[in-house]
Image (tube, rainbow, N blue to C red; front, side):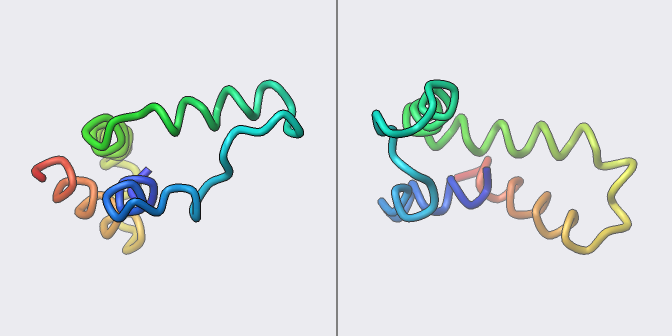
Length: 77
């Protein structure tokens, strides 16, 4: 979700994820449309609260901490 946020902010979301297409399966198109419809604030919130709920188990991992800190910054923007 952090990458979606960064891409949406730079108007480059279509470079990070596919756009819905009649050639994709219905379920995949639903997911793609959901991603396209999210507001930046929603992307930041989903990322932050998902990572917050796992902070106790994963805080020892550098990549997790980096992602969590990035989501905190995005939430404040």
